[in-house]
Image (cartoon, rainbow, N blue to C red; front, side, top):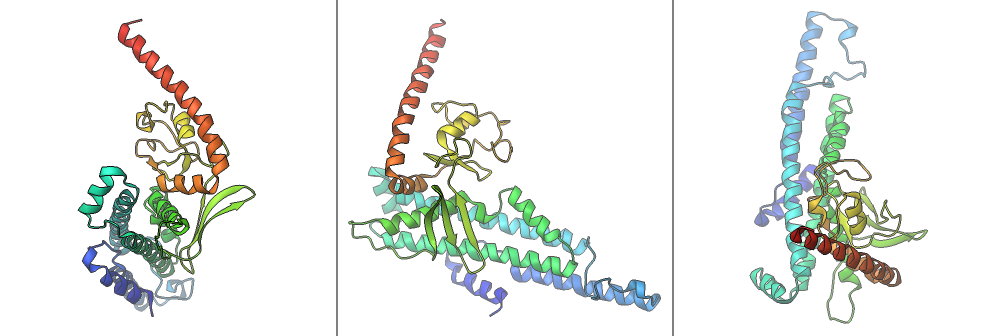
Length: 336
């Protein structure tokens, strides 16, 4: 079965959820129309001046020029808009799912009753599976349509567009919520003694250690494999109390606070807009930082001794910073 048909059939099964999608069929029509216009244009030039110079240097009259007003003016804007909607929808639904799973006390009772999911862990797992499938098939759709663009235009503009999307953090595989869903799956799978039966979200998902360095490894499909490193590039140790900046890089919370020149009392939102990510040097990445709660649960279970040691050390540092903060606040209040 061709991917276009497979993609349409999949999205039809998701009609009730009203999920945004990549207009794969419409984008293919744009490319087809572009190729048809190019053939007509080249045939016209040949009839006016039959010269071998008019032939394509690559032996195909269906090759579009490197810069095409038809494609560049319609294809890329449409694809970018659709991918933005897909990523936004995925992040929002993943956040809602994990909020339900991590809710405690009265909030947990309220959220579960509101969403009619009380006691239905199977419903949570199914929603997680559906979200991952949604992410995978849309990631494949984007890769395939950009590959087709490059094939028709005999260019690398499709690859360049994909790199641009990744630099803007609009690639769905870069989403920190996907990392959280992977950790959510492993946490449910390894949960014991509570009578919870957790089905597989996807195959080949695990926390692996290579020479003591942890990473999340997931074979999302036959053509997609995701590796997420869990070593903080600041302290060079396993991330503790991990956070993901909006650029997608993961650090320890305290390390991120140091790099953002803020205290743990003020938090990352207090970082200056000019503060840069220690890795990619992008600015404005601290305010929207995401605490990776599911990942923290997974690492605390997988590395209990390390986690306990870091917890003791950071508790001392947190107390020290909190004490200094309130002393400075008191002196400011008293005018000392």
